[in-house]
Image (cartoon, rainbow, N blue to C red):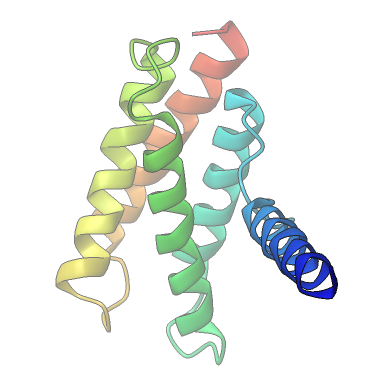
Length: 132
């Protein structure tokens, strides 16, 4: 009988730990497309505007890459948002920035790319305000 209870307790602990690990972290995406998109846009603007000599530049850049990956993983196959103008523009911006981070991890974002990303982020915000 004692063996039964110890196995049951072990099973319950494994389930509880497994479920606790599945909870999203406070900075993770919520599932609300509009809020998530605006949060990612704001985080990426912060990462782009960070000066080259900033001491926390590497951590901010890593967080930006994580947000790009999380956003793509969450919404890429979501049929309700994949046709929206805000989503297609956002994916273009994310792909551009992710490509820069992959190809030139130690270089700052060039002015030309910053300007283009800023324009695309403005288009995303405008499309979200229209509901598109």
